[in-house]
Structures are given as C-alpha cells and as structure tokens.
Image (cartoon, rainbow, N blue to C red):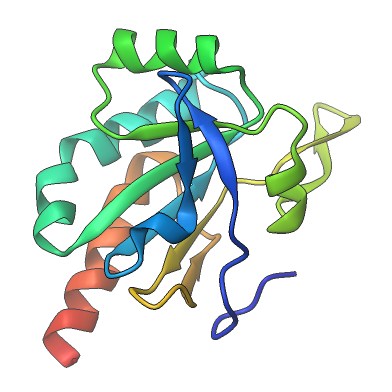
Length: 157
C-alpha cells in the first residue's frame, strides 16, 4: 500500500481526449490523484462535479486534478461532456495504476463480492511525494475535505 512520504508511483494514461498524460510532468504543482469506480454513476458524478465547481480555488492553491477509473477514453469523454468537467480524467482500463496505488481491491456490494476501485485520493506534493491520503469521505463532501486540508496546510505552513 502507498504511504505518506513515499514517492508517488509515476504513470502515463490516456485522457478523455485520448491524449497521454504523465504524472511526473506536473512537478512543481500539487496533484490530486483521485481514483473512482466508474464514470457516469451517481456517486462518481457527484464527486466529479464537486471538484469541477472548486477547480478555480484548487488552481489558486497550485493543485492539478487527475481522476482515474477503469473506464475507456470514450466513456470518459462522454462523462466529461455531459457534466462539463474541466479537468483530466484518465483511463486505466487494465487497472494497472489502480493496482500500483493499492486501490484495486475486493469489494462487497449487496452481498456480492467483486474486484473494483476503492474510492481514494492521493495528494502528491510539488516534488512528487505522497503528501496526504484521503480515504474517509462522502462523495458529496470530497471537494470540501480536499480544500479544508489544503487551506489548513497553507495557513499552518
């Protein structure tokens, strides 16, 4: 499992426009790498729209958003267009990056078990180090939890 203080595993994935996006290309900025189960589902939509709505605040705090799910670039393009999202969504179709970050796990839903993404967000520092891990939040509050942490950090720091 990924831990705070370790280097963030680098990756390159295709975005909603079928362009390659590499984590290490954002050095000098903080990166919120958030993993979610599936585009266009109710919880994932609420979470993405919350981030969309605070993107200007995140920009002011030098934070880039990268959302990762096992969807195809085409599904991500549809999700982005329908919800007017203003950040990169990345396709991890073989869930290799999800596995690298330890978020591809056995889940139980309505008595059935299956492998899937456990909703988790990693804040990567300007130097490429895991600064914080967010794994306890409601989808509707995710953006607020992120902003509270960042604003608390910037005031205290």
